[in-house]
Length: 189
Image 1: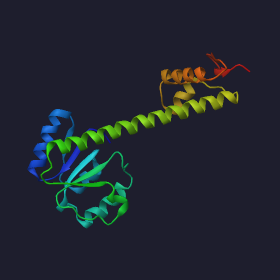
Image 2 (image 1 turned 30 degrees about the vertical axis):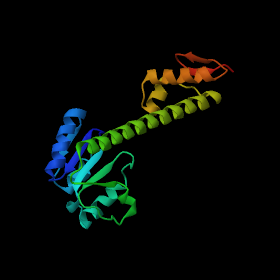
Image 3 (image 1 turned 120 degrees about the vertical axis):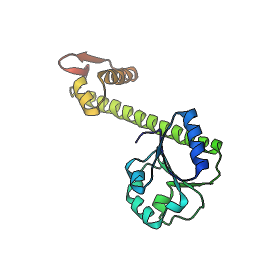
C-alpha cells in the first residue's frame, strides 16, 4: 500500500475539485474507483466514499479486509450524512466529512495522515534496527560467529546497514568488536 494514493468513490463534484487542486499542491496520486472491489483491491492511505454508497452489504463485505488495516495508516472518509456503524472494530476506520468540506480541511487530513504514516515507518525502522543490534550483541556474547552475509540474509538489509549496526554496538560496549573476513565479527574473549 503506497502512502500517496487517495482512492475516491464519490460523485460530489466539490470534493473531486478540491482533491484535484490538492493533487497539484501535494503531488498525491488520485485513483477514481467505482465499486467496492476497487476499494478493497487498491486501498489508498485515504479512501473517500459517499455515505449513500456505504450499504450494510458493503460494510459486511469490507469487514474482513478493514480489520487487517493499520488504523494509523488507513482511513475511509465518508462524504455526507453521518450514521452509526454498528461494528465497533471497523467503525474506527471511518471518519465522516461534510459534503462541503473545504480544501484546507482536506489538506489538513491528508497531511496529518501522511505524517502519521511517515512516523509509523520511522518507528518500524527504529524497532528493526534495535532488534538487529540486540540480535548481534546476543550472538557476540555467546561466541556465535556473526558474518555480515548471514545477517544481510536474515534481516534483508545491506552490508552497509550491518556495518553501521556493529559500529553503534561497538560504541556502547566496553569491549572492542573485531572482524575477520572468514569468521565474521567477534568479541575478544
